[in-house]
Amino acid sequence: MKGDTKSFRITPISFLARTTIAIVLLSVGYTLGLFHTSSSKPPPSSSSSSSSSSSPPLSISHVPLQLQTSTNFNCTTLKPNKESLAAYKDLLQFKKQCTKPVPQRQIYETILNRIWDGVSPYTGFPSPATAEHLLPLSSKPRGWGSTTPVFQDLISTVRPKTIIELGTFLGASALHMAQITRNLSLPSTLILCIDDFRTWPGARRLLRSDLPVPYHGDALLLHQFMLGVKNANESHRVLPFPFSTSSALVAFCEWGIYGDLIEVDAGHDFHSAWSDINLAWAVLRPGGVLFGHDYFTKADNMGVRRAVTLFAKVNGLAVRPHGEHWVLSPKPQPSTL
Ligand SMILES: C[S@@+](CC[C@H](N)C(=O)[O-])C[C@H]1O[C@@H](n2cnc3c(N)ncnc32)[C@H](O)[C@@H]1O
Ligand SMILES: *[C@@H]1O[C@H](CO)[C@@H](O)[C@H](O)[C@H]1NC(C)=O
Ligand SMILES: *[C@@H]1O[C@H](CO)[C@@H](O)[C@H](O)[C@H]1NC(C)=O
Ligand SMILES: *[C@@H]1O[C@H](CO)[C@@H](O)[C@H](O)[C@H]1NC(C)=O
Image 1 (tube, rainbow, N blue to C red):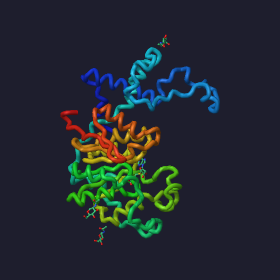
Image 2: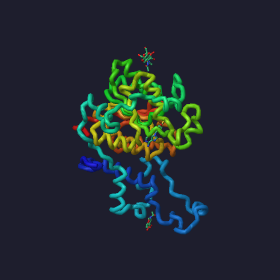
Image 3: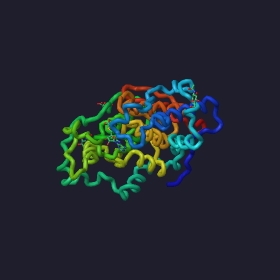
Image 4: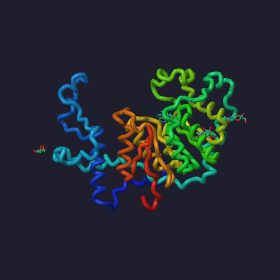
């Protein structure tokens, strides 16, 4: 892994910014429970069943950031030492600078070459052996807020040449975006769909009728998605990228693959969303827009919203709720970063 890693910028910035960063570092530390005083730790040998009775874990992750000022704590006991503070900075450290962008017309080919020896995964798809395991296509694949107005609004404003989606499932939102780009005379916009195509543990119990029967442990989501794309005649530009979001985005950063519009809708816990947002920001073209689903989901104590809010604060961005989605202000041009 090479390329220059720009560390989180604490260069000559205002006192206010420094204070904000300090507060953010503290709150991240608290959220992770790293600043617990020794008295709140259970004794090393205590059984797990009794450890919660006397000293409940410090839980202040729900406290809004601006309330966590020094007046709320005993700073003498809570002050982190130099080493721990240096370690907490790692939590905010993501690569900000990626490889020089590959030209737009080479993105599709670059991906094919890098992961499929240059052959489209749709070639000869579906083979009869695969087809027999897939479900008949429904006219409206299962999705979540996949056709809400945010897609039309952002695509008509940004007019993206490349869209990156994190979390595609059966392709409801991806194919909706494909239709919008067609309608807006952007028929060659690339739509790169990052998903491990395994759904999530337990999804089958909820979504039995939407998903194929697993085949030797394979969820077959990738192939069910591809069938929908093929049927919509979009297989020349709606491309699956079947890896975890973090490994996919790290690869895009190394290969110089950027998006003009990036949608985040994969893992909905704080750490997944935090990582996805930070890694996606690095491969967002200046002037591009990052947005995502489930601003209001209660999952992981509103993990998505906490991640979005923290990211916006650390980077001086505005967050705009849009229906069920969140939208960040456009990525500034490099000179103003
Ligand atoms: C809510 S669904 C996406 C729905 C889709 N955007 C729509 O509107 O129809 C979330 C998807 O994220 C994928 N996913 C979750 N965590 C992931 C990860 N760490 N890496 C790759 N994919 C992930 C799951 O496989 C699932 O298909
Ligand atoms: C804060 O903690 C220190 C060290 O334990 C203690 O001496 C001091 O009295 C405490 N201050 C307050 C306001 O509780
Ligand atoms: C695209 O245009 C067609 C024809 O006007 C319309 O029926 C369809 O709803 C539009 N699709 C979207 C997603 O706006
Ligand atoms: C896809 O293309 C085929 C062959 O040209 C056509 O019959 C079909 O209606 C198209 N489907 C869609 C959804 O546009």
